[in-house]
Amino acid sequence: MVDGQRAQWLNGIVRDSLAPAAFAAALVMALLAITQPLLVVPESRLVIMLSCTATALALAAIWLALRRFQPPAALAHPIAAGMALLGYLETSVCFAELHDPRHTTTLMLIVIASGSVLLSRRWLAAHLGGALAVFSVAAWTAPTDPMWSHFGVAIAFSMIIAALLNEMRLRTLQRLGASLNQLTHELAERGRAEH
Image (spheres, rainbow, N blue to C red):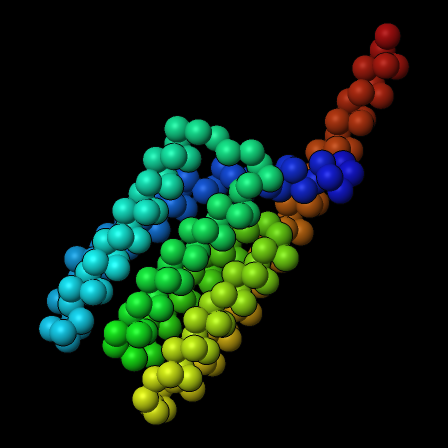
């Protein structure tokens, strides 16, 4: 398998993961839309609920679109980036409204999910950069709180875990692809020898 074919094959695997990922993300955001308003200060409830609801609806629309129309494999990673961007924007709203470093856990989950779903080091780097930018702006603009440093270490560890998951999955699939190519070649040789 040449590099172009390998990239197309990996993009196809990511494309096939997009609909379940969009569904799961929409479900999580819907649950957050229900639970977050119960946990935050009254002044922020409406904004947080609307943000979570809008994100859940956008992700549900992506899920429905992906179930109805199969995008080209080359668009798989950009679509995944758009889904992650929705999560980053929603988390940014939480940070802006509440200045609470505990919302870093949402970023951490998006980061680990990205490492598990994506099959491109370049796209994973973009996702990690987005999460780091959201966290950095939130920490920089928030009132001083010693928990920011704790969550800074936590987001760094989640990025390491995401990179490890991504690399292990990528290498496993590349070995699987190489084995599949070798098997296909051997079967073709055997077929020619029999004729």
